[in-house]
Image (tube, rainbow, N blue to C red; front, side):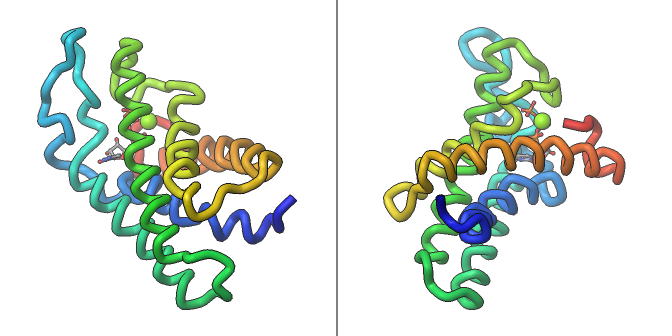
Length: 164
Ligand code: CTP
Ligand code: MG
């Protein structure tokens, strides 16, 4: 299995992309308030353009910083952008799924809140690098635990209304 540190450095832009909208998001929703065929919101008010942009910028910035600081095990620059793009689209997809299942904004979606962004990020980054199966399993478990615990903390800090 890959070095765990390398695995963390690889996925770091995705984590920054996923968490920055909590701080910088808000404003006009990505779906502009529009509804889907089932008369429920396409994505909901929790997915905003500002959040989307913040995720792309913050995740890509981490890639840029990594490309300066680290021995080039990967093309961190391009990887950071691809991971961020995948993360934000995966997050949108997760909310799309939740709305189709009739779950309101901020309602706990169990694995839907924690994992689609990771799978999308991995898929988008895969032309450059794909971890081994064991590596992916480590990332799934780690991401789940980190997501649940950081959201709990964000809630306690008053950054998020709900602890998930
Ligand atoms: N956020 C944003 N734009 C995004 C993603 C997130 O503005 N593209 C912000 C919103 O303020 C959102 C918060 O980050 O409430 C937390 O994100 P998340 O938990 O993904 O959204 P929820 O509000 O829980 O909505 P959903 O039920 O759709 O997951
Ligand atoms: Mg949520």
